[in-house]
Length: 290
Image (cartoon, rainbow, N blue to C red; front, top):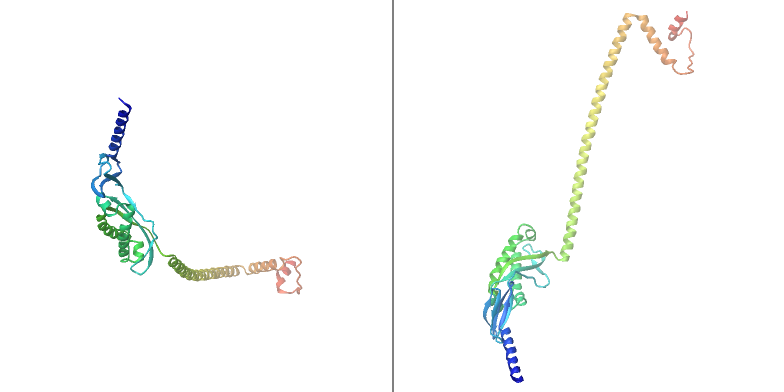
């Protein structure tokens, strides 16, 4: 075989390889594909595997069939609530491509989907948030708002060949100037509430103190009264005993009283009395001396 024939065979073989490689494509598990011919979609492939196409005529576009995020890099928008409060809202959506042909024909790729779908999602966010007050959005009505937005976006998303899985608000904050004013108002309200609680506490403390003082006076008065009564009964009993002793032995009673008087009078050191010898205070001593 001549050299020229070998070159021809080699060229034909290479050409066949090129044609064969250009006529095959592989769809992975996480992908789906559409075959395009002269700008028109001729078929779609949703299962993974090895497939064939017309070389040089057909082209293949691969689309993801997993759940994707629709989170455009945009400045968060201001939305007005039903009670005329301005809030900053930043939202995102999760979607899945269910009809690759419609998706390609309507938006081509994810960037085109963001340009088409995000304004729709933003409109539903404004419409539904505008039906509720700020307080309800922060509390029990938040899930209801999310469901309304999701249903509205879901109905619009079908024409793009996608299924909306979820729509969520990532952030819903007040503007900076509003936040500062609200924080100042909250601080003022908390300070006012603290003063009221402190005043109520002081009033309650005064009432408790007054009741305690009144109870103290009552207890002391009752104790003093009882002590006087006991002391009076003691004095009466002592007087009775003294009277009985006086009636039994008058001289002994006089002697006893005199001894008590002497004991109290002469108990201190260097006690001096200047008395007449006939003074009645010294009767017992005089009698003893005689």
